[in-house]
Image 1 (cartoon, rainbow, N blue to C red):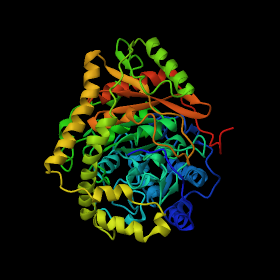
Image 2: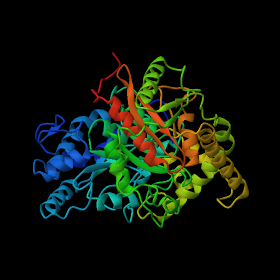
Image 3: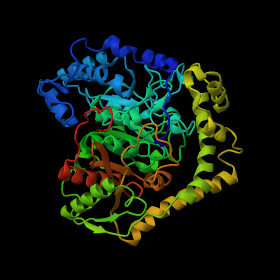
Image 4: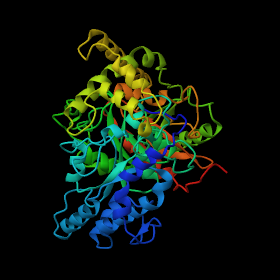
Length: 536
């Protein structure tokens, strides 16, 4: 789930936990000067993964050098950003092994030697913890890699470390600010440090924006990839349900959760999505998604992908709210026209607030209790074995977990029945049906290929308190329906980034990525962050 709120917590115990997890950075990072964003003549902010591969194939760069450069950047920038919660103590060794494979022409795949950061709710069977931001899971010892991590390794990636996140993916207490966790502290927006990074994939988005890795992986239940990507000026891909396995990911709900790439450009996002996608017997939703991505990811990189396409414009509730959002969105719509798209006005997706309150929330609370209990029970190590024990842990460990409550956790614990309960099934069916009709009926009525809308407002201050976010519905229908949602940098409100969202029907991931690529190549809107302490 996503959140922009609330007041950040500061306490010595939390700082101590964060320092302990990040100890490998100080111990293993290069002791030379901090990275200036270049290595072997390569600009880490501007280069694509194919560009890095070309440099390594030509012998101008090694994975060891690249990994060392990212470790230097983490060492330099993370004390301000709190985007990385732990660094893989084996990262340097993995990079050397990759270089050896390349020298012997035994590269494993398109990510050979590429350092990748993954969100801290994704299991790795190595010397890194998987905490979901909670000290309750510091003793967790996953028996195997998450399926997507296995695929990253098989593609040759160097798992560089874990990215910070909103604790329990924003599903603990509504007063916890986006990007805060007991294990990682408060993640900061890469562009203006006292602004919210959004969540829950806060660290993944900030790390991608700050070039702390070549690409990162986030997870989304409702906005948790696209919101932080928008406010940190990176590309965020929330795939269709089942394109990427959820096996080995700390869950909220199997009916919404999706993992996807966050990158500085669409090229890297697409390549990485292809690397982590695939069927998994542990996740039955991956079977229907088999074959929905073409064999070659490069086929989507068409700068003319928008020509002749009918693109709907979703304005209701999203324009007339902020002048900068309106300005950037109008320019984006005009660019779509310039690229040959037929822009169709009046194609607003129907409001989903009633569906969310009446059906989605009751369903998700039941699913969370079921899915989290199953995850905790199956994961080796010393940690709470179920939701009730987790709530008790939080109550007993306020020194590290903070004085926040566990209101959402308790709401889930108080649910009755399980996934075979008729009341639950009714809520889930109603929520999913309404969300899918909201999108599919709009696409069909106007014969649309996709819908665009502003992704998010400019990031508010970290300590913002409000009754919610005017853009919550830009993600909700896609999330509940299990449909893809892609955001791409579109412009700025002063130094604060703004994104453009592409939405479509189930398994339209390939088309949306193509449209996002065409828009990106025509606009080149993204610029690197300067880590301003506050707005001028």
